[in-house]
Length: 187
Image 1 (cartoon, helix red, strand yellow):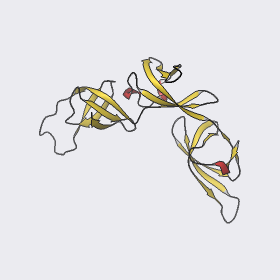
Image 2 (spheres, helix red, strand yellow):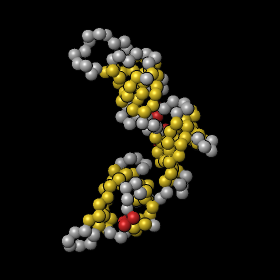
Image 3 (cartoon, helix red, strand yellow):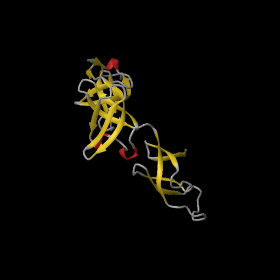
Image 4 (cartoon, one colour):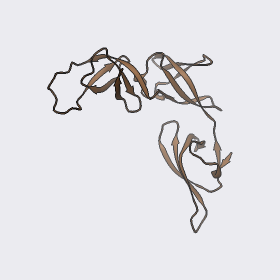
């Protein structure tokens, strides 16, 4: 157990039965009335930001959260299979836990966040940039655009579709930003 005096950014706590982390907090001591702590909490299960006010000195339950390195092995109908990179233990996750799963190829390194007490996986995060091969691209025709920032849709080796500049062709290898699914650069 901890109190509001122990608050710091990145502290993991159990809030209303859900694992959360503190994104922002501010201790407020008004001229009249008791002190309180305003917070913004990120729900680790769905990523939503919650605002809450705690009275000063309130007791909170902290939780132990660990990041672990895993490698993507293969996909099945009901989920994805991963292997821990150090212990070689294999686990299966449902498809809704993995964000941007269509940008993940076999052998891809990912980082998972676990609640240690329950051994429950909260998130599976891809690296910020992944390198993928373009398997299909419409040919660009010179002079068909009025602006310099024209984009076209391509299909990547994992089946994902993203928008890229016109000069990208089939069999090019590109980097993709996994946070916003945008084109990074040609490799």
